[in-house]
Image 1 (cartoon, rainbow, N blue to C red):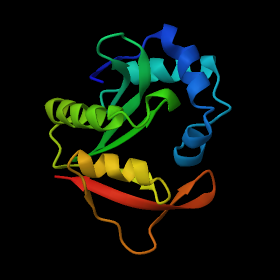
Image 2 (tube, helix red, strand yellow):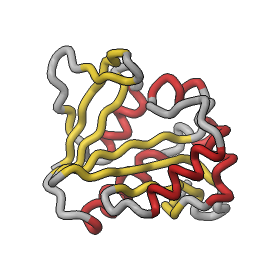
Image 3 (cartoon, one colour):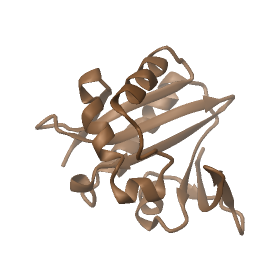
Image 4 (spheres, rainbow, N blue to C red):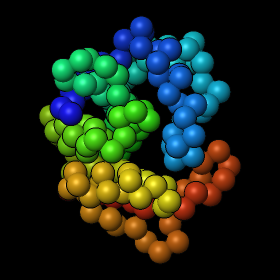
Length: 160
């Protein structure tokens, strides 16, 4: 399956909100299952006016069906990327293709020295996506990250 990235439209909000209730997305990302369409529309409006962030829909290049979400934000000369894929699109190379394309867009948009991402330590599939897209595991022993007041075990990846 070939994918393309495009801007999120307001009409996509219902689909997005339904997807973030998926148990794997809730378990492995910072998405809130309580997200509403209005919350997302406000977030999209902020995103459209933020030159330090990119948020794109991952879609099937042939059908135009929505498949996932990918985002990046920049802090100085480092960009951080994140992604999730809808349940029906998993295991088909969607995330790997989207991540490679997002890295190209990040490099075109911003003068960054590196791109980084984190994956929950139990999310082996996301770790393989990072590695397949040319990221290197730079995790230090015992790495954690605070998410909603809890310490999550994570793996950190970097692509220079």
